[in-house]
Image (cartoon, rainbow, N blue to C red; front, side, top):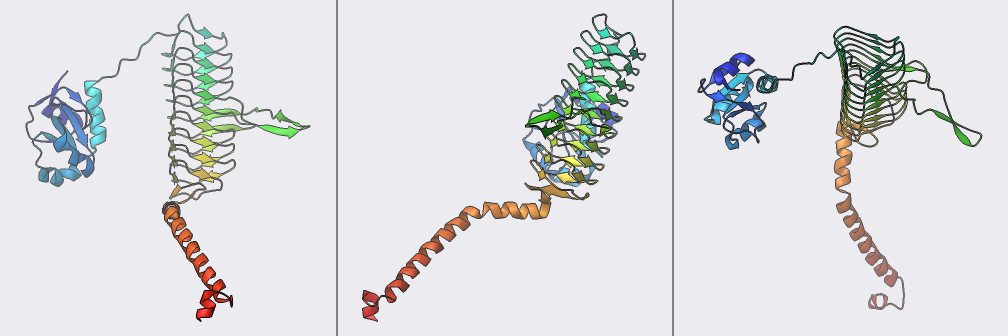
Length: 362
């Protein structure tokens, strides 16, 4: 498949500078592109890489038009408002997605007679659907998926291989669950009694709202009572742990290996980088941004960035980090001062001794 620069510009609504008739056959990153590929630059740092790239053309932000002229690039350029979105459109043009299959319900799947499956839904071989579960229209239930009893799944959902929904889990519309995600396992609830840890019954559920995407290997525990909830549009990366009775707001974004203990709540648009850890019963406010490996043990107001263990506002946390980096030099200076103090103490001791050479010389 190939396309001219002019055709790609029409596809993304861009303006061409250079040879509009040049043929392009693929889309790649600046580093990996060859002469037949188009790449993109979203900022000046990316733009500075283009002269060293073998790319045959580039999508450039309109805000970089002057800088691109100064860079004297010899390749055709397409100026657009949003180069990343435009690049994704071009990428899908050259690598179109496979059409969705329409296989219906495979005879090799187990579907309880009391379950309801909406029109256009595919249930692949090896999937299992429990009693009284309701699945909406145009869903894809891939091989090895296990859906318990009494679940409700909205329209247009995709459950990839070996996803597990325990009983009574609810998914909204257009939810995507990647392979081996587990929703609705018992929360980690025990009480120490008579010399042993006794299980506290976990009788709640999990509710996932519309347009949520959950990564591979992520686990979301059911509530003890009530529901563990994931808000509209939230995106969770791979291998994340959400404890029982957590309630996440809308449009949260969490990177891999974030861990939330039980009963954590968040506002909307909260962002957590990788390996953030949050203690139980903490609230994180709207728009908070947590740097990687932040350790949260108390409520955090929204609208600002945080860093560190224990977590601090970003400015305070960076000061602490800078101070930590100075500790080795400070330790050397302290040892040197201690040595000098010992020398002075020795001199003072000798001055106080009537028989010492220093005292006699005085």
